Length: 225
Length: 368
Image (cartoon, rainbow over all chains, first blue to last red; front, side):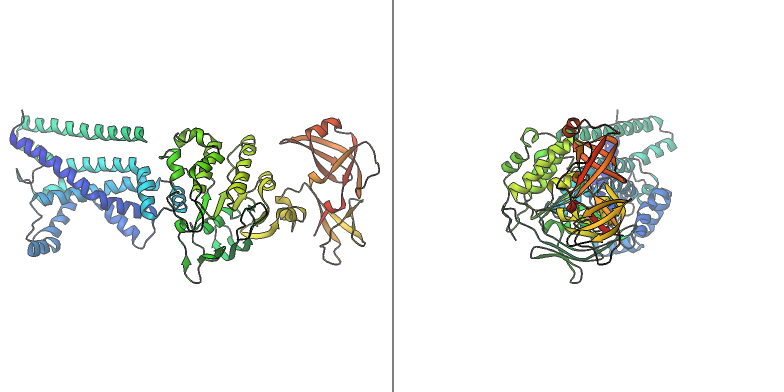
């Protein structure tokens, strides 16, 4: 059976993955909508920057984050000096790594979801007296909901399994920054196979639960409509 | 707002220097629309939908001045552009744009939250009563038939209490029998709710059934505008005549001009026209005769009040909607449209000799 440190490990991984998914949601929705519906200067540059973590080796992304967020880095130094907050080698480091790594996946999906909403529907809603905010909430968002939910699921899954960037930014400190993937890798390295298999089982169960619950949510949504 | 006898307020929509770059040409429109139902007529790709989009505020023009009654909606020179949601202009697009995730009822109520000054809101009950939506108001949009979707889209636009309704080929996707069933609903909207409409179509039957004014748009330019009868009886040029499907268009040469009548020769046949608007010294013309204006008599020539009595042979007979199209040879090809009953009573057959009558005012001449 699982011991208390293993429970802590699973709890932390799930919690930080959910938190990172929720954190990227508002920004991701905003950026995806801007990419799907508006033309603006620098759009292609932003597009490229966002997709970069998707194509770069995660470890390389992790290294960039480490340099930016470390105490001697531009952001990390500022936060340490003015707010006494450290990112690197803390749970915050894990969170940042997960956010950065899953953000492009979410935007990729949400953007397509927005693009697939017929702009004519939004225009006609406007002629019926609806302002931008109402159009977004009552037309665009509900019609893109499926794709957005899919994007959230993928972002969450990406966060659950993240390895390279996390280990660079947050290390693998048991009880503090260790996540499921890091712990599985470490157990195998140390020859603790039974431990590794138990964690593997948990990973499978989590993946199953995530996919199944999102399917269930979408089916329920389809029925309610 | 001017009010006609039937109580429908006339709208006055002023379009000045409206200019918009479209793919193969640019839209350049200056005109004034003031019918109860004004039809925007023209071939596909003439810029009709783009023009509606500009009026509704869904698209920005390179330059434009658009005024509805006494309210300026767009004035690029002054940097004025009233947003679509505040224009008070209802829009039923070609694909209807019903919200697929909302029920019929919630679709209908979407725009009724808008409070528009000066226009008393139409009651929900009255609109769904007039358009006979009650039977399916609780259904999902996906469960509606074509004609039902059409009425829901109309009702949704109406319930936002617009000052002006824009309809973009609202019947284009419906089959002929459904069309004839929906047209009366549009007439009811005109008569019962008094909301003026701009109606885009390239269907002549819809045009004749509904419109009182029309604007002919070809390649982004207004070719002709005015009351429907005038445009039909006097197409400004060959392009308009072709669009209105004036069936017979033949080259002719003027041989005599007397007091009020013009004698024109078409393939050696002499025709008399009451055309008044020809420039002086015009010799070569196109002779336009609408098929509806050709009357057929069985047998050879007999006296009649019509100026033009033509001895003809029936070339072919074909169904055209609810009517019969009879193609004749009277020295030049001439087409007549008859009801089925008339065709049966006269027992018309290809090869039969008939007399074709056309009154002088129905022979329209366009200089060539």
